[in-house]
Image (cartoon, rainbow, N blue to C red; front, side):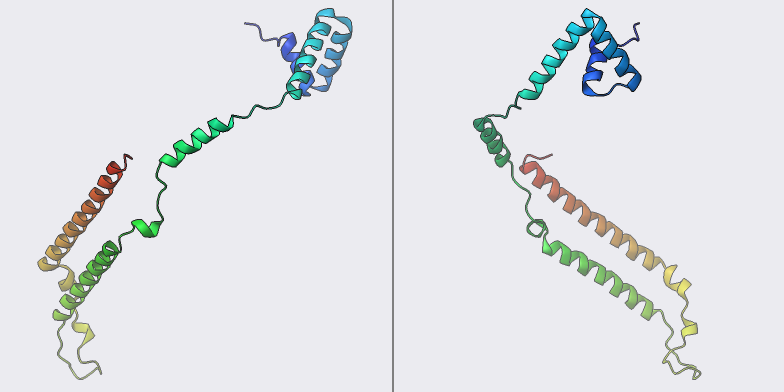
Length: 171
């Protein structure tokens, strides 16, 4: 396997200015003394000048128009306000308000409201047993039903989104 760069590779590096100072001196000496190097150098410099003189080609106007027509055929995504269903947002908000309200009602029903006369509150905060509130079977059932309802809501939303994308031809 030949690891030495060819004459053309070394000359291109020289013409492009990517050669080291020692290599520049060596190549200049070879161009002056060797006919093969001199002929190759003239050929490559002529090609380099021809490349710099030619203008870059631009596509025809019809080609550009065809591309723009194909791009226009695709639908542009609408603004977020047009595809966000406000009813879904309101229903999610109502769901969470219902959950929080239900938990508060359940917690207040479990509180012992008798006053012992030592506090100015109508009930004794020391009688609130948090472990009774969160270890209850009813609370676990309530939370399980809420999780199942939330998953059903998410499934409906994703199904609608999938149907919408399939109808637009975007999978």
